[in-house]
Amino acid sequence: MHMALASCYSLAAADAVRFPADMAFHRHPCSGGGLSSTFFGAAAGFPQQPTFGSAAPGLAAPQQLRDAFECLSDEGASSVVVPGTFGSMRTTSQPPRPPRMAVIEQVVPDASAYAHARGVAAVAREGSVRDDRIAFRVRSEEEVIDDGYKWRKYGKKSVKNSPNPRNYYRCSTEGCNVKKRIERDRDDPSYVVTMYEGVHNHVSPGTIYYATQDAASGRFFVAGMHQFGLD
DNA sequence: CGGATTTGACCGGCGC
DNA sequence: GCGCCGGTCAAATCCG
Image 1 (cartoon, rainbow, N blue to C red):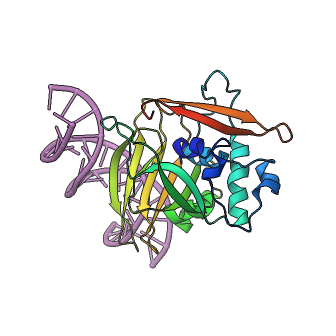
Image 2 (cartoon, rainbow, N blue to C red; image 1 turned 135 degrees about the horizontal axis):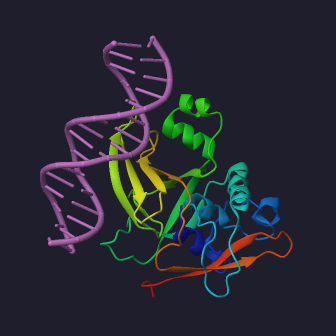
């Protein structure tokens, strides 16, 4: 998932994030004392050494991102509202649209998502799941999510036991081999399941991220962003 | 006209 | 060995 999501879902825009009333993210150890938006970056395959704005000291390390991600999974987070441009996959021929609110209903644990995508046998065969794959489920009428990156569609397949086709995308940035698969949930077509694989070796085009570090935990958080063309 | 998308073909892994 | 399945390729087509 992506940065448009990660960044908008920032400390500065914490009021744009809605959690179940019985959740206490501010006290959860995974959140590092602050509302963690970093798991979105993990899903998106944040650049390992991104270039941020001048005020940005860096961004969450993969492990930290996974921590946050697992935090939500463990807590059973079921409703997170984030500003994102759902329904408008950005391509080189399409300018970015203004953000719209979208609801991430469920984050799919990496292993199960991978199993879901490739089959339990394949996962068992590999022994373990690569840590650069992650998936999530979003209730959305449209399938494409503008995550800030440019993607090139390279395949479409119908999958067994599902009436919905699976679409394959590859990051269109030269030298970046991040891929993502998008398909509607076979059990509930109102959900879109997106799975990312790999780590971007570049920053989201036209986007500058500002990170902040929590003094107590040492974790980094996306504190803000600027996306050219949106303002 | 160049770049993105579509879509059938092709390939490799796996189970029987 | 054969068929099934998921993933990828690439030629044809579309579109701005």
